[in-house]
Length: 80
Image (cartoon, rainbow, N blue to C red; front, top):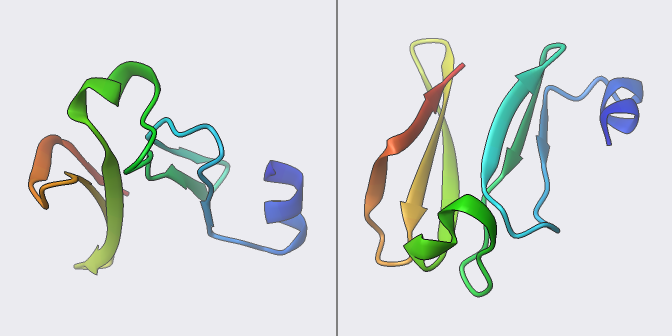
């Protein structure tokens, strides 16, 4: 995935096959897995499903995760 992102000069990569939410910036590329609304797995499975919204605020990318009831998960807000 990282090699393809680099070859395409991607700045953001969204993926979800693992059903585990996560966000990391590596070598200038932001990798985001929003988790899964239907089949959450991993450390945050207890939340019952998640999704993410990416926004731009003051030249920073904000990744905010939400639960399936549309509640922002304050401890899962990241700024890059």
